[in-house]
Length: 154
Image (cartoon, rainbow, N blue to C red):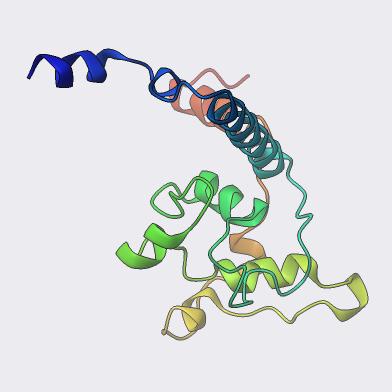
């Protein structure tokens, strides 16, 4: 029992004493930190840099995009996944129009997708059009809302 408690107190990298595993662990850690940083920057940059069809392709649809993360900020009850949307798919929190919005943003201006009714996309008829419902909000929208709620408009 004493040995198990001693092992539990050791940092993971100390458990592997060979030089090779120390270097491997350091490279894996550096790779993970690089991936996390790049995904955070890309997720918040406001520009969809991934190619058209990325959200629908069988090999890449599980990976998050800027659009996926941006929709999480606009619709806080959807798109919780940090790097991958597997759990969003499993528990049903992926926004229903995510793929449509991704493809709409990737269309060249001349080939713009027609407006699709958000209600129609969700199975109803009529309703708010997707482009209007998914308009980007100004950076200070939360501040403006708080000012309005506090009655401090001038």
